[in-house]
Image (cartoon, rainbow, N blue to C red; front, side, top):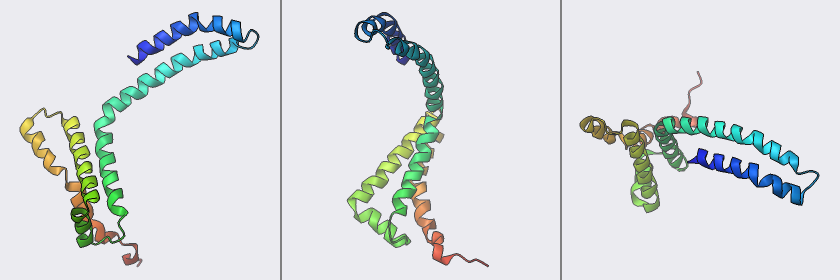
Amino acid sequence: MVFIFYALSLVMMSLIRPWLVHFFLPKTGGITVYAALYFFPILALLHAVFGGLIYYTFPYIVIVLSVISNAAHFAFKIDQSMKALIKSTVTNIRNLLIVLGHWVVHGYGIISLTQLGEPVFHTALLGLVPLPAVFYILTARFTDPHKLHTD
């Protein structure tokens, strides 16, 4: 669909724009037509390459970004103890919705990656959805910079 838009834009630019440029900018407008004729193929090539890359890496991007955003959400908490992280997540509705949203995005990434080709095995992989949050809560106590030993 995008390439059809590029083709129609190129045709319209080739037919209508020179007439408008000649009418409104008789001496300096021709350069813009030639510049656009160079930019359209470059834009189409960039769109094709990066569109394909995003298409094939989308599930991985979704999973990685959901893990990073989950870690960032927990990292902004002042009290990094296990009890405080669990309590703030369960008692504060905003935090609970944020964590559930991360879980939904993570599950969507797993489903889009596996495409549920083997329904029994791939549905069992959805049990891994809470793992990043649980891993952060369990290992947050080891990341205190004041407890580093520099021997």
